[in-house]
View 1: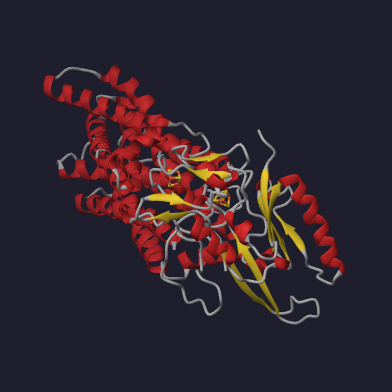
View 2: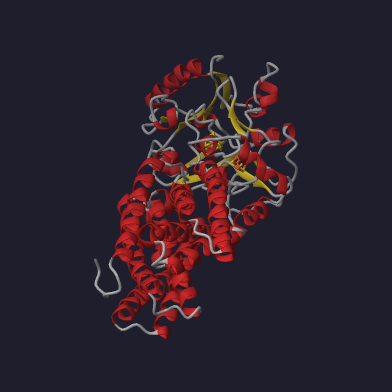
Length: 289
Length: 259
Ligand code: SF4
Ligand code: SF4
């Protein structure tokens, strides 16, 4: 019998991984939209930076709560350990937080004073975009750098978490535009295209992940994979993460691009958000079981 | 750096008395726990925040020299790996290496993130819910810095646990394997003695009477952080796809076609 132990990270950490990915994805999308056309895609840029801010605010709180003693979080800010994705991630989170705050502030100033700060936003956006990608991906790399059989053999978890960040962010922005009555604009069409593309990358990453664990071929990795694919997590994985969370919204999203409909957009976006969370949740739960 | 210290656990001498496990608990003031019923003499099933030395019992059919069932014993402990997954993982620097080559967790610095628990290839690090910190065998840090060996080695009545300089102990262990092979224990082998082998060698290494699998040990444990490079490359690949995808999505203007 193997002695491997589990960190037993609680549900809140899944929420953090989800929100961090959402914030990173939304920031990157806002930045790219601003680069391509800051006036044409004004709605997307605004929504993206605000979503990033809202998603990021709970993140440090979650991490602090998880540690039990609040002041202890600071211990992470006293060292810099490139070997530890957790150390690098907490630094990236700090820098990204700064960029998100600035981008949201610039957006707010624009909204209130009708000024044009797109140059300032571009600089913060490009720097913050790099860290946004990092914040979205590092949890997957962090899991890969453990001895847990499902994670250590998966190799594509960083890629997958980043893709989920992008798809859920696109969905969140699309949902906001739909609710705000801007579903017909250029931005809304583009963000729906983005959702579909991100879902494709998400699906690809899931396949690479499964194939990699399968290919590891050790008794431990086979057992871990069976937990996910045919064991206690099979419903959450196949029905939740794969069918409802990835395949169905992919088909709906494609249909929505052909013949746009408010209801279809909203349902697609909701499914992507739920599915993206379930992907991260099930990877965490099955990997720790 | 001083000469590396090590513990050599020769499982062929172990009689399963668990004096080491008790001595460890006493010296380190680890306190009582509710026992696990395992169906054998083993208690507990895993390392815990109050069990740093754990005598494990295995019934291995066909593993005895005459082909009979063998009753194998292993007094297990933190390996104080030369390349330690726990140490690399720690984001606070709480886990450090001493001048003797051992690996310790500074309880005042640990912030309770539990990353090291998942990062140890042997399931050694345990989380203490009371203190909210990670704990494990310290190689009796206080004792070895005062000229004493670890409490477990001191207590062992059969010298199954030996303490000393690593290079001396490895030579001794290799001789012991030859002796045992001569006695008919064909599977006698060292685990973690080779400093060019896995994890750069273990500073607590073992002599086993069977394959590592028989003892539930990983055959070729790898340093978890070895994955960071490939996993990061794949993440960058995904980031490029997302970035290009976003450019495509926003550049093809409302004509409905992908561009
Ligand atoms: S056995 Fe585990 S806890 Fe001990 S040094 Fe190695 S990685 Fe760290
Ligand atoms: S639980 Fe403590 S010792 Fe373990 S990695 Fe986190 S900070 Fe370091």
